[in-house]
Image 1: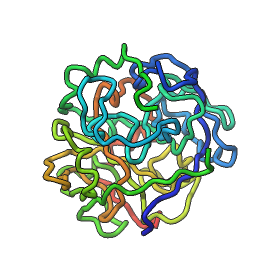
Image 2: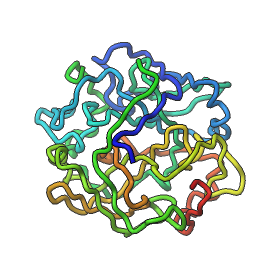
Image 3: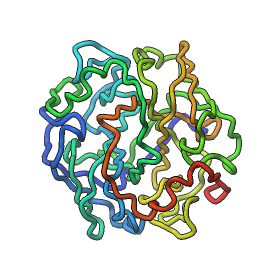
Image 4: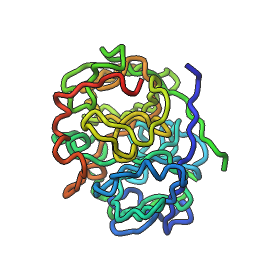
Length: 161
Length: 161
């Protein structure tokens, strides 16, 4: 195999967030915030039956994040953690995941809600959210156990710019 | 921005599955199946504090899938659906997601369970699974509503080879 993989954006995500500072840091902190997906027209057939799902995963490229930090200090703590133990964007491969609410699909435009994503972000994939596959009970969440719920109030700053 | 993004594998996933046929089609059908991650040594610092989490997302490249189908017939149905309404691997950008159980970390080797991934798969990212961010209640799951639970018994065939 090659030493890298190459992906092409399938469209762009639009949101009210035009700068990387002062954004919600997870969809849980972005309840009700509307956005949209402008899918390139060639992929419109791939949307068939997606409207049956209330929630979708978006996989996207953190295009405004510069540089990798293997041990960043994430927004929800004052101490550094290994980047794979965080959702910080300064990852070796800066791929973001958000689960957003799907409101409607009209041709190649998807209206979505709970959007914690920067305006203009290149979209790589859409997958349906399926609790039987994706919802895990009885988990441990390490360093986040006292602060995971704080996503509702926390906003980003410019540390990953 | 460029018209593509380039990612580098951060390691490889090892599993008992050496061919793309007769595999579990989701982690829910792979309960207890062991595997491992061989992370490239340079990324070992990024694992710090990950051992506090019981479950992790793996993002990986479907390296054995050839070709894109915008309307595949997924394993869990006999009718085609738009690929973005499925978890089929024949996606415009063939990125897979699995939530696996993290058993142990020793230097750059992670032992994992519930592995529905082909042996030798290039790994792109590891993220902690955090119910406050990732578990959604009150969802609709469209065409899958009568068959999502069948993942426990279903196996793959060679349709995406």
